Image 1: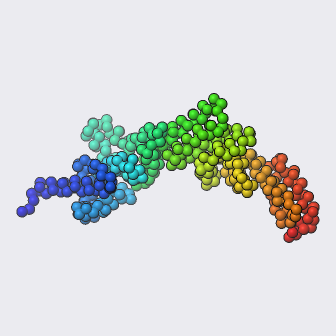
Image 2: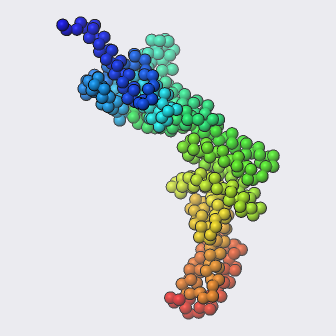
Image 3: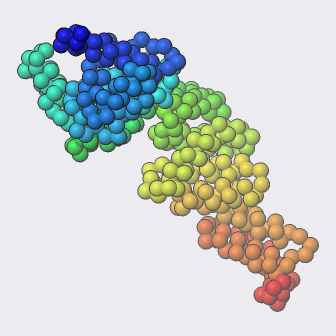
Length: 410
């Protein structure tokens, strides 16, 4: 006996609800998290009407959810019905919220998809406004038009609230904010919406990171005004490394480290406290290396080049061999070619290497010519170097002893 129309509709709805529960379990296995409300099963009905959707639904009824899960994750959302976009936004938003603590990387991906769906709805322009008008009247139209931006602001609020604890929810929010350009690309939004969304996300992300960093910076500055020793301030500044990790190595944190390490480094440098300088700088090496690499890749980042070079110069002074010192000095000058102290120190290293190479019983012509090149570069880098006179004297003495051999093969 054939089913009545209403009975068939009920069966289809119950099947869709069962598929929804199974699909959510597929996406969250093996965590056993509570599925969305049964009304979210409308998403299954909408998916089943798409090309290949009927087959994907049948496979899901047989507990194979892969095809349906793939349909929910298209490369682009352009052309999808706004009703489906709404379902996807809510589904992935819930998925991201539930997985934040248990599976943060999956949570970020889900939130990025949810944001893309909200942005696509903002691009469409009518669907959310119609809903808002139906629920709250005409005054809600403007609110609906900025709904995607409000979702970005919510993520910013989560990140800012976590700036004291540096918890996982805050880190997930920061990563989702950093991925707003990806959401815009997937949503296929206009340049105007993309610019607004990306600018909002960057501002909110920057605000959260700045709040986290500023707490450490204020503590270090207070210690300095109270006369705390340099190494104690460096230890306090180490807390910012946790912010760096939390923010996925944000450049702002690196800039703050370069800025705040300078007075600490100079205090220890002027005191010739090399062990103290080495201990103070060691925890920050990866942070400074990252900032230096950014500047090397993009020389236009000149605002913090001098500060970064200053820390690299301090680091070179703590190296154990002249070769390591020269290598660190070379990087200092790559980061900031005009850095006065870097050029001064590098000239000293080159003179030192030249002098050491000549301070042997027998000097070959090849050694003397290499030493001459080192001295010439030192003179070019810093003509007033106090190391130059001795290096020149040693070089001239070696050349005199060698005579013609200096100009030959040695």
